[in-house]
Length: 570
Figure 1 (cartoon, rainbow, N blue to C red):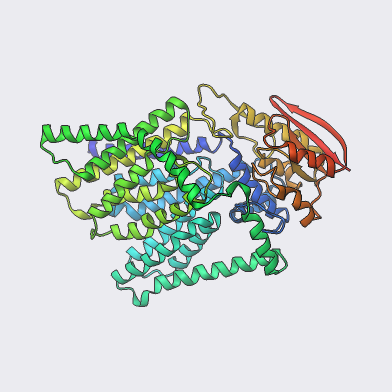
Figure 2: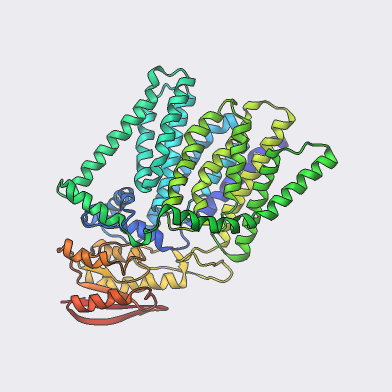
């Protein structure tokens, strides 16, 4: 009786701890990529059109954010506090998907492993913040599509409505991060193979998936064409312009050479966990006569690597310690190989693991991130690999029990890493190392980020933006700033008009910014902002602004450490 009560209480405590940590995350930290996601949605809500007015490279991820933002403005009449709303909505969606995931897998994995995996997915967001940026959307839509298709296949291919629902979720993921569409080919082949295995008539699941995605593609194409007056030539010219971003002007060979140079550093960082794993395997062999296996070596390596990243994250206050993920993924690959033919593994492999790797391969080629930060995109296939490891379908012999214990250990280490980092580290703009001991959090009291506790610099800037833009409701604004403050466009209760090519950071000296005012003549700014503390690559663009716009007045607005120049255009 006491043991039964303990078995019920411990999981409940773990769930409550995770819920508390994630709820805290909804009210703490602020990073410009999250602001960027909201400002993309705001552009659509304020009347801007895809590809015509909007020249951002990630604009296809703006649709869900726009829908949420339109609902919030419709209910409240403004944008004050909208960031907290977004985070809570995403948190609720994550909680719902984690519950569905647990119910889906508790039979095959056992309740402890299913719960740990569900909580890992609940606590994980690629860039840590809960706002709906393109990376977070790609992960969450992928998970939603997987749950739909997995349930359809494993329950006898009877609930066909789950396939088009999964297709819609997958398409939203592909829109959020178009490179991840490489996963579709693998996913479709997987549906063919699994349909045949389950005796599905005429591979209807695969064909419904293909047809549903095709319908989604046509619907989006019609929507995109409506924004450019159904001119295919204009759409193609805009796509060429947007894709010709100087930041991404590198070849595949150049990108691979850069990553290869970083791979050695990553490999060195994983040497000590590998040695620790080998030492434990040797000790188990010498003391308990347990055989040394490749699987055990990889599983313990994954667990030790995760713990090492956790310790380094606490020591450095860094949220970029992700080097353990490829090791977990490698351990999962071995689990799939050793467990081929085991019931339940094929579904995980074809619907989760392999599509995740296909998406990662394309993302790795196109992203600006260094090698180690890209490992966040491997988390989903890594979790799928751990699910294969803890699969209960291989009976109850000692070897199987050991494998499951090692898989549970890896999942527990991943969950500990996610929770400790969320509590200890403070997310700041630029991903600078910061933790709760050296970075006090300040509550933002006005504007879209009202109610968020952020580092003093970020909080001061939000207050400064609010004060600087409050008098200019309804005016078109231009942020001539190296690190864009996306929530600045949502100030004045969502009445401002975005009068610039892109709201992403880092492209402000891009010559396309100047071209924008020729190609879109109705977008002339009346208010221009300079950030006195952020002048990266701004000299050329500022000179062009001073020469081409009639500046009739300028003054400075300060709040704490933040200082903005406000320029008025006549």
